Length: 132
Image 1 (tube, one colour):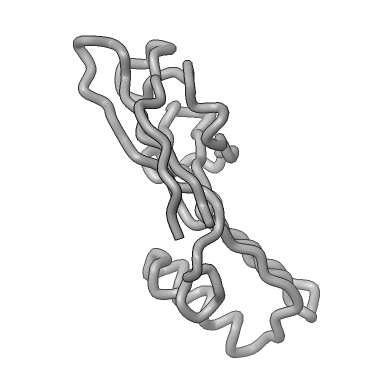
Image 2 (image 1 turned 90 degrees about the vertical axis):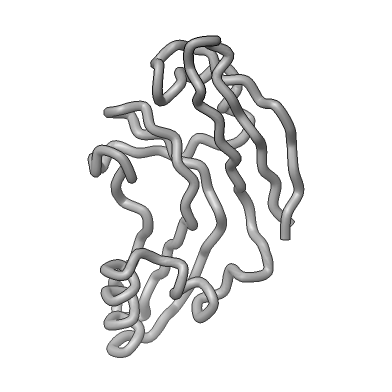
């Protein structure tokens, strides 16, 4: 079961609010996960799966923070290691600025994080959720 949070900016002039999920639910196996990926990423992964043998697989819903523009975004986190030594990792870039300087944020690290819109250290967790 996964967890999640609702967050909002405490700045009265800013309307930023978002819900994020993290963890593992029932859909985090390779075949059901593929349709949820970006179409270019999906095509690249399907090509690899046709020609290579999967050795290990790790997937979960994750929250990412862009170190360049401050964007927070939720995406499936996917890592596949193939028998041939190749790997597949998703995501690799920010959904807003496309920069590769992203890191996993985690629910526990969101309180007090700078707001992606107004840039003030004012994010506040409004509620917690459980999901599957």
